[in-house]
Image 1 (cartoon, helix red, strand yellow):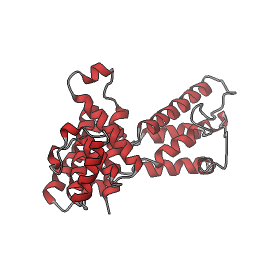
Image 2 (cartoon, one colour; image 1 turned 90 degrees about the vertical axis):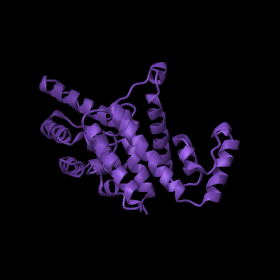
Image 3 (tube, helix red, strand yellow; image 1 turned 180 degrees about the vertical axis):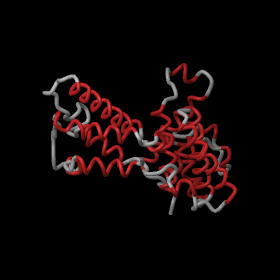
Image 4 (tube, helix red, strand yellow; image 1 turned 120 degrees about the vertical axis):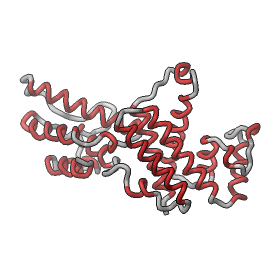
Length: 267
């Protein structure tokens, strides 16, 4: 089961969902009389491969909260609490959990990796493209095996390689000017001012300069910055000092960053 058929099944069972997502319907409730259809939706969602649920941290939280709310109401109905209804969730606007699930699915890929991500046809360097495709395959396996740290590290390395490739293919004068300005403004460390020696740049510098030059969309930049922060947790003692851990949400954010960078760089 992929994401598009699952989304289509939700629309078929509850035709009001697209209208609620468009803001035309508010505070829609579902009663026990529709328990069979609600249970069917949870069954369909459960058949979607985990590697297709690629969402940022906020969207993934909404996805999990929706499933928890639906499963809870199903238990209430099964226990004979017929008066319970499935309605909007506090903190998630006026959306019914079913509509919230549908919105989450619309943000997920229908295949992983997608054709454009898997093939990277915009990269002319065949050797680099082959290495990155192998890394993406490794990310797919790590994500499927719940290996969150490996997923984050590999996805971060792919993001770094893609940004290095993009900057290396760019006009050097404007790139150097952007790098110097960011160093002057304190965004980059003046003591680590590598100039045009891109191999000595950090992921932080790659993201900052591509942002300055408008090479990536704002949402992609935000994901890339989060991925950079997550990847920094691999340094000895850092995760312990900060009380952070590697988890599915961070792994999915890193994958979402990788996919978004590919989309932004694809002509």
